[in-house]
Image 1 (tube, rainbow, N blue to C red):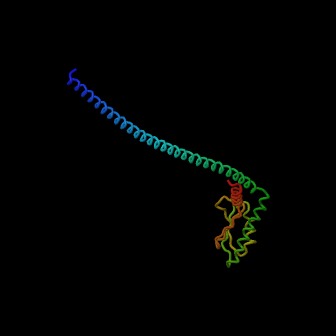
Image 2 (cartoon, helix red, strand yellow; image 1 turned 120 degrees about the horizontal axis):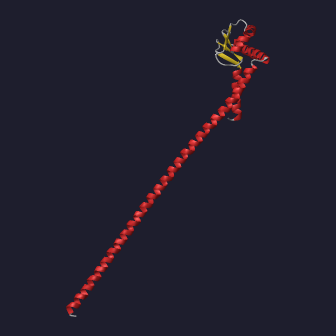
Length: 209
């Protein structure tokens, strides 16, 4: 091998070695960039997954709370409906019993006591006014038909020098009476219906329903 050929071979090997080093450097740099890019993309992906997961949980919790709230609301509504149904049933039965009571002989004494009591309360108002004029005595339809004479007699004895009128109550009072003083604008309610209402209010307060 001539000296020139030897030199050319050495030059060729040197160039090839440099080329290999440059290639390896380029590949290494490329691998590093790819690794960094993959790592960055992985972090972005993981962050997006975390955000999606968090959002999904928040939506599930929100939906769950909505469902729970709806169930609670519907449950309370059903309980209230059942409670009202039971209470109304109990006191409707009481009203029916009082209607039957109003047709008994014992009711006559009850009616007289309640009428006298109401009229005496009205007359006590004379301490505050010169006269008690315009007294309306309101009865149930049945009592108006059967007890108007006894009502007039009792009223005449108690409402001395006082004008009064006996009429059928516009409300369903079942029995007893209501007495209204036009001069004072007060109503004395001695009706059976008020007795039932008071019993119902006390029952609801006592039972906590």
